[in-house]
Every structure is written in structure tokens, then in C-alpha cells.
Image (tube, rainbow, N blue to C red):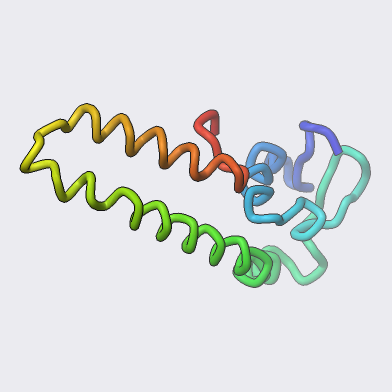
Length: 112
């Protein structure tokens, strides 16, 4: 399937499906391949397709919640200490960097 993937009504999905890939969901989990370049909704229709998303993403979402919880536990102290050391720029930089680095292994990065 190439980047010209569209639904039968002409709506592009290739760019959007990348967001689902981070949760382990592929285009064929949500759509039927009409041919190499086009996707169609499942026979059940768009609402049934959308209803499948929570089940398809549940494990990855739980992993994300746990990962972010661990990140928060490691970095909450830096935020709490701001009134004492007033190093806002340093803390902000560290938080942004470590947050982004935490997301990279699960398929989320700054370029999206």
C-alpha cells in the first residue's frame, strides 16, 4: 500500500494511519484493501470500524500510561523544587528532552 491510500470517497488515510501504527494498529485492521492504492471501510461501516479502535489499542494505551507514570515519578521532584532553585529553563529543557526520549521507543517522536 503506498502513500496515495484513500477511502472510496477520496479521503486520504495514509497520513492518519501512521498515528494508529504507534498503537500497533495497521490500516488493514480498520479497513479492507480494495486494491493496492485504495482502502474501504469494513462491511460493518464506519461506526463499527471506529468501535473496534479501543480494543485494538488497549494494550498499547496501558503501556503508554505506565511509561508516562514512570516518567512522572522520576521527574515530579524537579517541578516541586522550582520554588527553591528557580531554574525554570533548565528544568523545562530537561522535562521536554526526557519526555520526548521516553516516547521514542513506543513509536512517538518529535517529527509528527
